[in-house]
Length: 334
Ligand code: UD1
Image 1 (cartoon, rainbow, N blue to C red):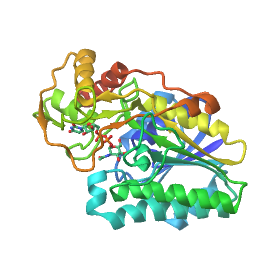
Image 2: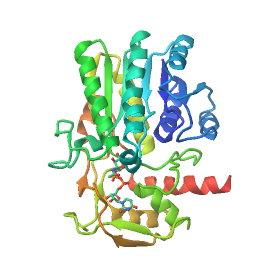
Image 3: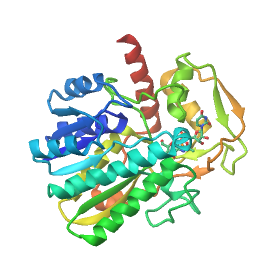
Image 4: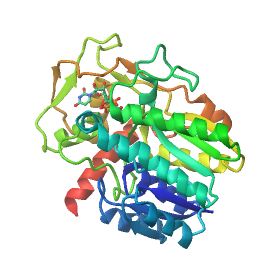
């Protein structure tokens, strides 16, 4: 089976590329390196000892996209080419809606034109807004997103739902990621946020390495065991394996939605403590005011993915911390 990965050189795309190649899938990657770089492609080849087709262009370029479908017999598409910085999405809503929503439409139209109907979409737990209760199941209410990034995910989910209603021969899988962290155990691929990171783990790693001075813990007065925000952190390799399991599910038409999380919630201070224990590095932190738009607690009920995909997260928090740290160390050495 030949799988097209748009944004396949990015953080989650590159890890999924590795898992697919290792499992014997053929892949084609499209990426414009707007949030990644060429070295990632070599790293994927080095880890897997396998080769693949690569096209460098913006996935919204319909002509070039059509050429990819003409040159390759694509069986399924996984769309990783979304912009994902929450703060930036508030500053640049048009860019976000254009890239994420219009891009998805162009991709789906092209798939339709070439008769390719298996599609996996990277969605996010952000579509649940501020959840009424945890753990969050796939039936939990969606909506109440507070930024264009989150709203773009919700809009694409709606488009996919309508598309399936119009033609039930599509095989669509929506994966709602919780908080992906960690890196491949080789240390050759990982997360590379540009500028100062917004997300917790990349920030912690840079404080531990001395690149940033101190972590601000955004609020310690939430209704959680230690007052800091609780999230469901999932190792990016587990998440990538989830995509492969979803691909296997797509041999039957349908519209499927799965939470990909561990089902465990950890606070900001739990993460700091586990990071220190796993790496032996000190993480300096201070308590700071709450961050706008943050919620107290968010973690998945991942039982549907286990029952229907036979998938569950295997890597624990120490693995996530150690692999995040290992990646940065390896990068410094190279
Ligand atoms: C964020 C996004 C979410 C997106 C997800 C991708 C926001 C409001 N939400 O989720 O839409 O899908 O990333 O992974 O940005 N924290 C600190 N100090 C920091 C950074 C974070 O205390 O410097 C805390 C946060 O308050 C939160 C937890 O760490 O309690 C996790 O934050 P983060 O990694 O940014 O993820 P989310 O906010 O869950």
